[in-house]
Length: 203
Image 1: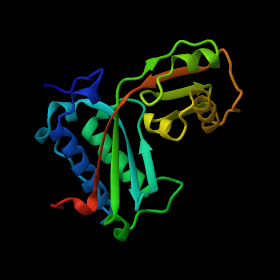
Image 2 (image 1 turned 180 degrees about the vertical axis):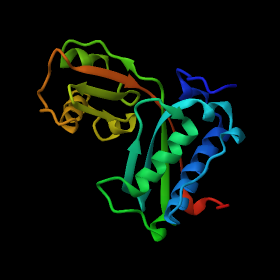
Image 3 (image 1 turned 90 degrees about the vertical axis):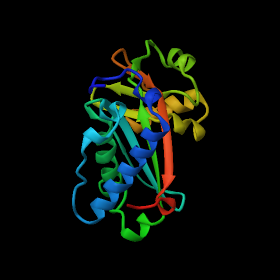
């Protein structure tokens, strides 16, 4: 299978693919701790991992968020996207200092692979709220230069659809009551996988 863009890439991942992505994420972070970049030979991976895809990588240390970086646009092989986002989550998230070797030994890695976003046609916030599927939809909200997303996992903290939308607008730098004719909204779903580095057999 060639590197074609799959509409629902997240739904095509086997358990082996998920294992490989988690290994790549951990290897990328471990390599970053040594001051080098992980080199990836795409030919050894499945077609699903060679296909263009978008992902978010979230890392936690002792159940505390330590970094989260991701891609909304599908622009490179999924395996490469995970490698780049894992390294960025560990060392380039502006909310945190760079990950340390000690923290790496207690690291929990969570990967969300995104489906292709689809537009939600809505003329008002109420219309948007009625169309959302709590616990399922990731949402991208955009108006002019303001843009933000919430992964489906955010529904756990914000289960009310209206509150979900209003907080997402605030994340984008807009007021909670903002709405305009230029508002663009998309939704996507995710395939999620996770593992703890301390429980992995490092190569």
